[in-house]
Image (cartoon, rainbow, N blue to C red):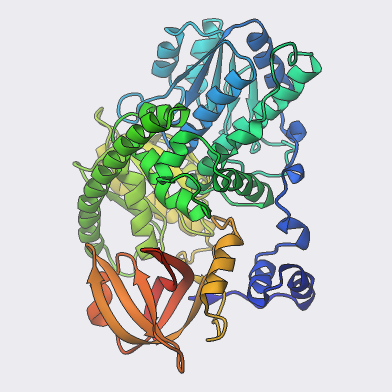
Length: 567
């Protein structure tokens, strides 16, 4: 466990008077937040103008839209792609498009992105224009297939481009070399939102609105942008925090799409929805469709305007998520057994595989192993054609997509395809015989990034809290102070506590009663930590988040335990 350095005095002083809470001022200062970045009003959002290719894209889409042409959205099968797809369909229809349809690839048959197979399926819909969301930047062959058939393609994506760009009519991606957009961390849904903003402006300039056609308020769709941004775990820089904060404000004011409210199980009038709830309630339920079945169910839920029908769809998605959890538990048990057979110290990166693993759950298993071992992890399963598909999850300081690129440069025969970004990536291994070589090459590629030192994914703590600071009121302030997430980490404190009681709850969770010296015992919960119960002494160092626990109409302070170690 590492403690973050104390903030500079001038930065702390600048924030202290503005936020009125010394703890919160310290948290903001250590995260490099300026006083101006605490203003989440929508007028502070970046404009679309810096995005390379935005003018060509807007011209292309607006021409088809005004000619009542057929628009087809091709989305990814994760939460970012699903929210981006629903955003595109709703937004284009609100802007006056007559014919908008969508197509989502299958994780199990076509695989990721606008492949040739997906392009051929798209041509059966007879589109006048194809727009991608959260994919397309590496879809060279599929986009070439569409262009050969005379169908223009506008790519909106946020994944890192390869050495060659696809032959699209326009590409919008803040990660393109030379792109002038100030935020490089938009999720796929965020890129699509900016296209819609620019498209609305162009249509307004052409006199499209009026005479019975109202100009839409695209801000009403920001709940979709918030969910996709949080679920895709992109860094929450100031612009992304603005997008998320505005989406949460819509939900907390009783707005938002009926399908998203159903995924969150929000009754009318319920307030205080947080980014955490988006990430841990709505995100997994939506992702379950693409992991276990077909993401079309998730997209239809987000497109549904009838609350009762949306609730039925959300219930079906919740059932798929429960099925996913059961499959995940079995796979994690196998992964734990495989970990026990690895040499110590562990390699710089871990590559785990099994012939019977479910391809839709690989990313989650990789993430869970990463959390336990503090190493980048790739989990792989057979793709059904002799090749193996894998999902990678990384740790701070290791750019996993770049590591895969290094593997491909060293040993081109290993990988048929790969793509992604710093913290997550996907890949296709050329064959089972390459599994050992890939594992060794990946570990070497990670070491090349870290200067030969194995990654250290220790928890970063904001230090201790005094007894007088550790209150329900502080937990409420911290909950409201976000949105917290990747790149803008939630507050995490640490201290030595006395353990008064431990008991196992649920399948493998640990409920504790802890106290600081001279303090009263507090309730704490450590998810998945039941195996540690027999190892705890009466005094332990705890890394924790103060949390508001609402139960049966009661609200109390609870510690969410992120780490336990000997005092």
